[in-house]
Length: 288
Ligand SMILES: Cc1cc2nc3c(=O)[nH]c(=O)nc-3n(C[C@H](O)[C@H](O)[C@H](O)COP(=O)(O)OP(=O)(O)OC[C@H]3O[C@@H](n4cnc5c(N)ncnc54)[C@H](O)[C@@H]3O)c2cc1C
Image 1 (spheres, rainbow, N blue to C red):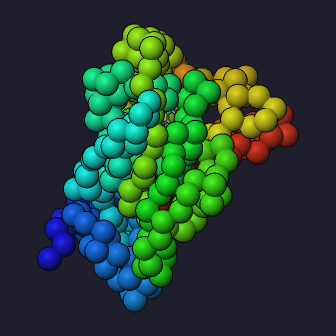
Image 2 (cartoon, rainbow, N blue to C red):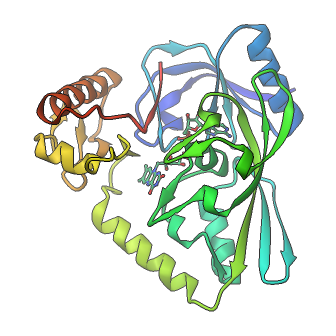
């Protein structure tokens, strides 16, 4: 039987700590269990929602009756050395923290710019997470995934539609595992990682529950700059606000609610549209 919890507080599954309750959250342990859940969602005509670390995911309030699939128990991790290179085979629930520990231990190059992103492999692949000029697709080789009919597929990265913070997995598919390829390095990788973490700590409100970047950067200007110019840096509705430290980061000051959050987002989007004629596109994924 697949592990599940009933009437779970969804705020536990979202780093901004906002959200109602899930009728059920499932915790599959292998690919067959995920496949079963996706087929179940098809049979019952219910949406399925994959959940990683929840660092870009926000749930509405009330009781949500979807097939929530947490990747918490999908932690398979193995590797293979090929000359200069090391291939990592990672299941969806492996955290970036775990990958970083490995990367530091073997002084591997390719992943260092992604350090500090609070992601799972599945969430990062689905979002094409990136930082400091690197995206996960730069080091990705192959993804094993399950489509909405429940079929298990393997795709090379070239076969996957992806762009800035977008992949086709946002529309269809559960990322089950990914192969990434890294290189043995002559640089001091631990030092680079430390510098990135210091940089993040300076710029991001890491002392509060947050969902990271709220909007994608439009081509005209960074979203944080537009929000600041529109007067949203530090602006709050109830206990939800755009951080004083980074205008594009939503934060929860304590008892933030979903309606406060939506109210703030709609206000920001309308104001930026009116002032600059730019439609901000949400990077955060809202489940409602
Ligand atoms: C403090 C902070 C800093 C951040 N910095 C960055 C940054 O520098 N760069 C960046 O790109 N992002 C950043 N983010 C956003 C976030 O960390 C990334 O988008 C990350 O990739 C999300 O991974 P996750 O496991 O938390 O996914 P979740 O938030 O759990 O999910 C995100 C989306 O992916 C889907 N998903 C999750 N797992 C799977 C799966 N196995 N298969 C298919 N779909 C799946 C979810 O349904 C949801 O739609 C930051 C967030 C925070 C809170």
